[in-house]
Image 1 (cartoon, rainbow, N blue to C red):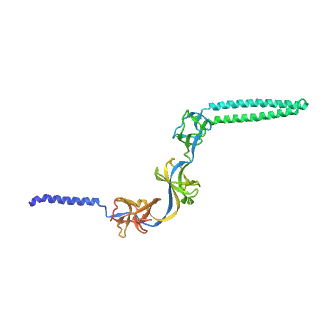
Image 2 (spheres, rainbow, N blue to C red):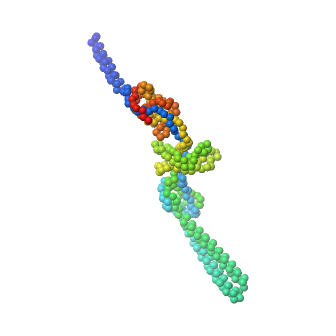
Image 3 (cartoon, rainbow, N blue to C red):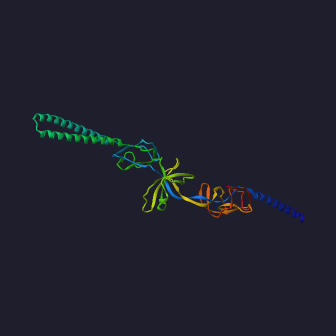
Length: 356
């Protein structure tokens, strides 16, 4: 029976040896060299964040100044257009007829004036020789004056008719994009009713509405920060471009437009936020790279008096310039690990010089 137990004892020894080898591979080294820093209080700006939308500061509704059928309309939504491009052509048949009528009116008025002037010349000579009464000369001059006024009116009508011809062609007033089309070829264009809507991409602003309690702190040309949800990793900078000093009587909010400092890949309709700097405050700040997540909680590794690393959960606030605000969980003078990797765990002894 003693020999029968030997295989089992050997198997148990092998399992024990394998377990020790595995444990040695799983547990990290007990001593690590890492950069550390002593926490100090620093200044952090007080930011007032307001949501808003990107809009074009040059949004134009194009309508016709003349009534007529749309003869050409070849642009669609989303199409880019350049300043001076032909967008809409109104059928000029009615305009051409009005021009012809005005030309005929001018010709008739000029003939009448010529006849009246000849009468004046004739009666001036006859009156001087005593063959025509002065009253006849006076009436001839009145008729000439009326003919001159009639000609001036006819010429004004002709000028107006000629101007209508220019309005039959609607050109793009800006470099932009067609964002809406309300009419089609063959439909009637009426004065005051929009046919197209254009947006210029040169003047893009982020429009927000600020409550009245903060309006006294916001100034024209103030430098601000901005974020766009569609550009999550890009911090934008801009300037207060416009403040509309008339608030909504219901919401008590005022329109503020922010323009960007440089060309940005933003489009009208995007959602974003503007952060207005309203002062400075003291706060505990830790580098973003020092914050890690363990067990679903965000925190840092502090280094105690014995140079042993301990994970501590923190309540964090805002981020600013690569720093994270510590709301609770850390005190001035405590030392933390600046750069965390998977080898760092609770109870590990750390070695390293403090960084600034």
